[in-house]
Length: 479
Image 1 (cartoon, one colour):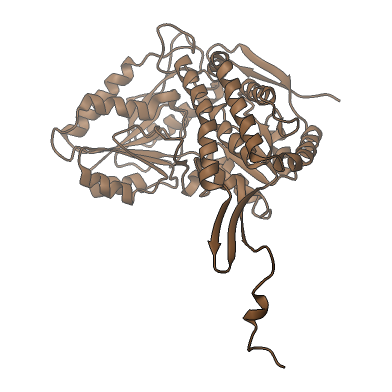
Image 2 (cartoon, helix red, strand yellow; image 1 turned 180 degrees about the vertical axis):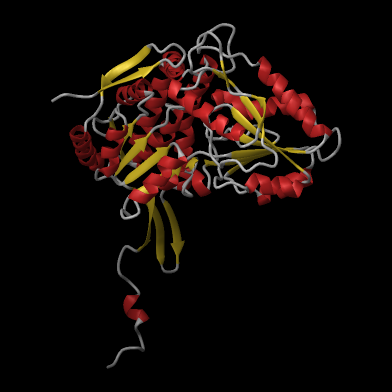
């Protein structure tokens, strides 16, 4: 039987990074059957042993951290400092997942007058994980580790753009002693993913676009037994407000804005896409400082020296799509402070960040997955909050202000799952939930709360013998 071949490429050079066969639908079906058979034994494995395997996996990541960081950077294009940070997050995720399992999904016993109340958590069974390309290690890792700790079997399909990282993760799990069949890797593109989603799975854990998330909502509407956890994108607002004149350092603000909008070449779901500022001198100063800092950002390949701040977008197609979206906004009347410009003598994946003034315009409420920041100027803070919430998404939001009263309003009135003050919108703690509402998710946040969707609670009343039941009927029976 012929197998479709899958390749991944270094976005900076176009060189092939990985090549291998894509799993055809028949192979996906066999992998699901294997996972189903493996699940029962893994679910009945004592938790202490599952924890030991997770810690061994952490050790495998630590041993190969340098090689894995280089692989992540080469396959995604992100600078090596980002690849190293991603591996560190993967390593840290193990202990955080163990802590979350103990906190949110452990067994609990409570004595009552009616008997002992016992809370247990059972695994769902066979969980499918579809990984994204922007964090091909960290984000699927955040689903896989909690799912395995809970006793599920996992089928992992990495993004077709980053299969090498997925293969490295599966090898690390195997080397850590995870029993065969408990974690199965299925490589491939849309056809492979469609076969996996259509299979007899008990859960789909997905990180990706809102468009794909909406598709999954529809096709699983009639399959209520499948737990669906969606971690999607956002059209995230960042409000900068100098409530007390002169309280904010404009250069610091500009650096925070750049970190929010342009880190990872804008390829983070939590990147700021919309900058909301007051009209007048302060807002003008912030825009000027952001534009000047944008012009100084070093762009380059993942292993270049001096170290670049940004790498390329994932593919020429992604760059072309982003440039088309920017062109559409400019055609609607946006003022281009900086355009999404291709770099001379570089592959088409390299683009310099865009900064567009869209004040007074109605522009598409879409996530542009690229370094594109749209500026809106408003008259007052009420208008700033209204503008921030004027989106179908609800993942991240941020306020930059020294005014505590403004923050207290903003954190209450913002419609987002991650709301930061005086920190980039891209900052998130693994010890807290991560997820959004609206078109940004389905109210099943990941990170520390992943334990919630990897197991279901079972509540019991228990007693050693069926005592007291006869007495409860006294006086209510006929002779």
